[in-house]
Image (cartoon, rainbow, N blue to C red; front, side):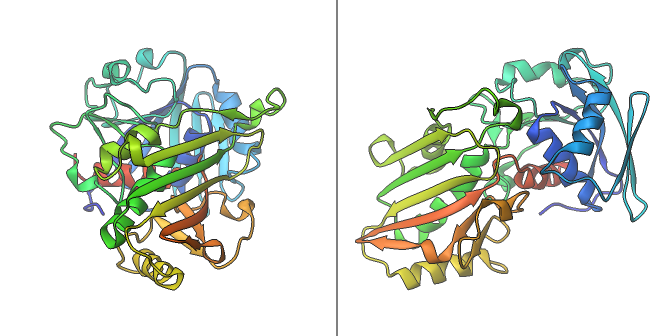
Length: 333
């Protein structure tokens, strides 16, 4: 998706929560990544605490790597002989001593979704700030594998990668509309919480989902009258659930729907690399750190009249699309 570059672009990251941890793993796992994380800042976490998280996280596995701390330098070595040295700082991101050095700035704290709060990062060598959440006032929202070709480095300095739900829904909905027409759509999300919140979070919480706003902005066939998102946070730390309903103007057989999706997610298909499909439900645990935005369950696909019901898992802490987008942008700046 991106051109080869002679040397990786230096990158700095702010925020080492679940997303930041997963991004570090996605990057270090990719020997051909055209960017290199050289700096890591967290407003609260110290270097020893960051090392502790990396070594003990139950879901993001670094056990095949040698990870150590030398002062404020995090050292990571792979079995293949690759190594990374990352400078760790603690404190306000806009006061990080390395500000302006990297060409890419990854805003992964979740606390700076407004573009205005990311402007201090656009200094010195830094060409692009990538926000790991929905940002309503970013220069653009760029979804890897969907509208990435629209990225313009001269106009798009602060961008959002979308969100877990936006990436999980928009490309699939656009494809099904192209094939069959979509008159109405509904999304049901059962979303996890962070592990550290489990001891004090013992209820269900219905929340507004940014997909409800961003979906119609990407897809003109959606509007308030024909699109709804139900989003519930539950006291659980694993892989989340995202289920879809699409009503078509004419009846589509279950067999045709499944065959159409399988072709699209297969080699050279329109959705290749974005979605997976498994024959039977194997439970959520199988999809930790999946490369897909959502994994559909074939034997759960149902047609009720003209309405298709699709059931899927998605690893909302995953960074496959963010890493894919960063890879593309690194080749464009």
